[in-house]
Length: 133
Image (cartoon, rainbow, N blue to C red; front, side, top):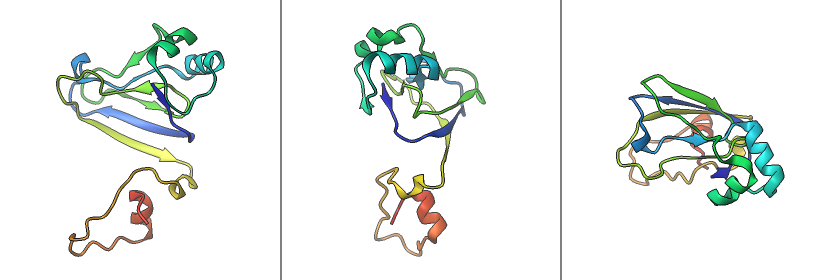
């Protein structure tokens, strides 16, 4: 499990049917995550499962499994979550992230532009969208 540190909303939509053996996104609802946080203390980064369960998170997990088009809107900064554990098959999920306008100034991904990419000269909006300098 882990928390992210910015308020946001992410849209997760299954492109193809997603089953348990594909390591679906799994989360605790915000109210349960808040209870766990009060019990174990606010932690940024990864938290061992047993610590989450000791804090009251056991049996509250929601798994995003289902047919194409199923999914969820989720604030991953408020909901403990994990994904891609013990997956035996790949899954295809559309993920759209909405952040506040100042979040683009914080690095969101280690994205580097290949130096041999001909003709790629991103404008300011493209740079902000890709998280590059």
